[in-house]
Length: 85
Image 1 (cartoon, helix red, strand yellow):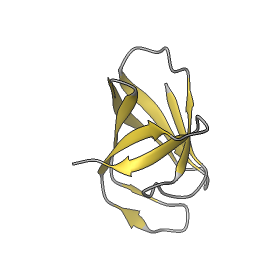
Image 2 (spheres, one colour):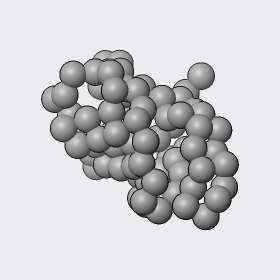
Image 3 (cartoon, one colour):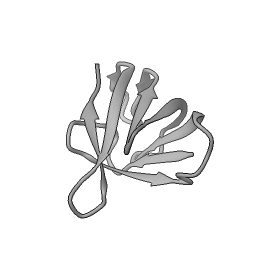
Image 4 (spheres, one colour):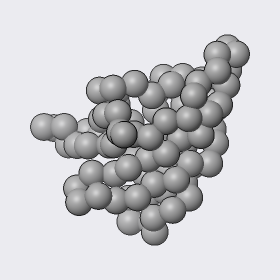
């Protein structure tokens, strides 16, 4: 499974491309628009996806804390990120 964010970080309401949605849950590739990629973890939750992204540093040197995201489809079928507890 691969999750691609078009920006250097994820944020609430941001778009995310989900590839290989039929893959088994667990480890995945998380990549950002600045070329940074890492291994994350995902789990399905009904129609939503829970995605855990480890701490990382953007290509411009900004440290980003580890976060959990809930990914949901919007009205037109695009995946969007929402903060998860």
